[in-house]
Length: 84
Image (cartoon, rainbow, N blue to C red; front, side, top):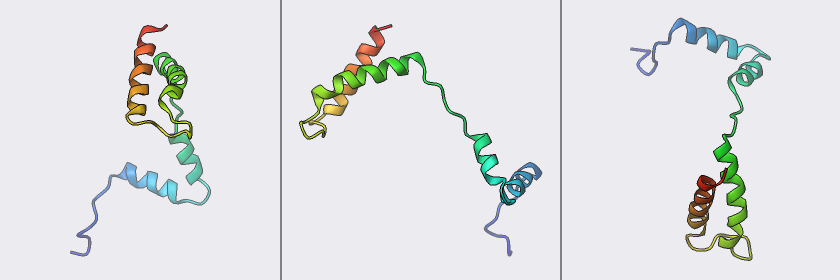
């Protein structure tokens, strides 16, 4: 049992691995897989709201107060749900 630790792979998987193993094409394969996600309108509203309220829950040094991040996050979600 020389192959006790290996798993069988399909022909498609073997082709992909061969393509990734060739010189110079590994970057092309990685770039083809990566896709930038598009932020939803709600995520944009939440991000803007969080930046506005975060200062209230941070110390002068820039660190978070006790439960500050949690409270800022909750308030930002509340504002984002309301606003359009």
